[in-house]
Image 1 (cartoon, rainbow, N blue to C red):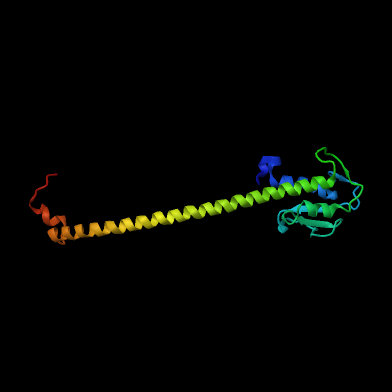
Image 2 (image 1 turned 45 degrees about the vertical axis):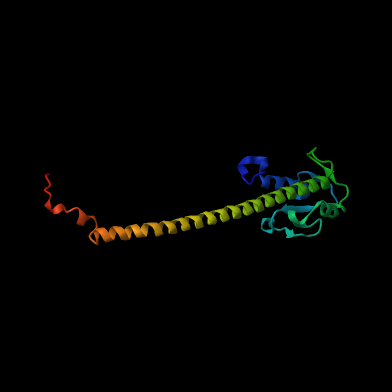
Length: 179
């Protein structure tokens, strides 16, 4: 799955909207004749709740439900009081609760897999960072040793040549330049 809307049905938002087609009867998509009809919008964070939906309201009210706060068991419990539900427009699932449960489980698996991947990337980045620091310390030590070698050579050169540098050795005053 991806967060890029250009990739159509592989987009996480498209998948969450498909779940809403099963859980929110106001979408007029898959859920028919449920008593009480659920008006649930499933989201990955509270900021994504649709306007007019309250966080975690009772079945039958416009409720915003967090995917990560729910499991197959909580889904079964939430929708256990619904009766006479019919599935309309899909052959993928035989019941509304089966569809919602499957979506919630799979989306939570996806979320957990991504969390694990991010944790692994952070841990590996810390290893790389540690190796970079070790290499930097070696470079600093090398440069310090080089300074201890170069400095005596500079002092020797200054003793031979003096403050005037190469100009004392090469006296260009006696040479004639032809242009």
